[in-house]
Length: 178
Image (cartoon, rainbow, N blue to C red; front, side):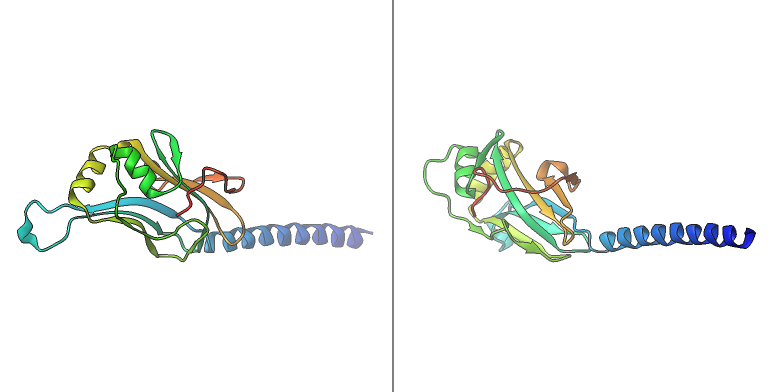
């Protein structure tokens, strides 16, 4: 009887250890493909025309994680109000009446591989870039992104790369369309 009880105890302990190791392996798998999306701005404004470089303003997203980041939702706001395009947001930001000429790459619905940088918006007009930089604290852009295991996070330009875990990501009527 003692041998039978010992076998049951050993079996239960082995099952417990096996379940614990399985949960550790799942956590390792999740960590091995965890994305981390950082939203940033970069700019180059020449002080004189002798530098030979064009003045530029870039708004960028970079996946600094070790897994792909699937961007499900992206939003741009000025003073907390959403705008559907860069043109609408920038015109509101600097109170500009005519269309703004800029280059852009789509981020909404895009999967960004690890260590990939996406330039979401590029502006070459030095006058407009300077005006935008003066008002930049009124502008924010945020992304909701998920891993391949459908674990999701929200990050914004103002968070400086700090992402917060969310239950899921959903697009809405105020989602960015470019």
